[in-house]
Length: 96
Image (cartoon, rainbow, N blue to C red):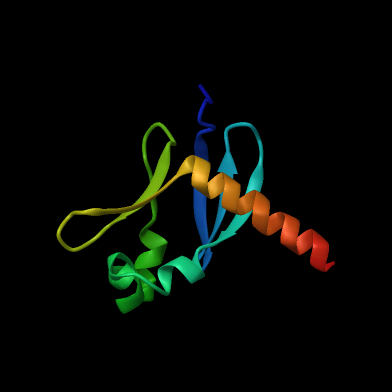
């Protein structure tokens, strides 16, 4: 079984982009804009971009989330965010 590397912090950079630090020291910038741009579940964030800054970290660091007006979570797990951060960092490295 693979152990989940916990998220230590998640800070908005701009709308749709987070700087995330994991418990193993890895830091990455994750661009979620392509995901937020589509899908009904993200309408809450698209309708009022300032809500993106209300991102919260689950106490154990297994996910980040936003609460919509009904109290439902819009969330991303630590592992999927880590994969996205590593992939996006690799793309930036190739482009430079």
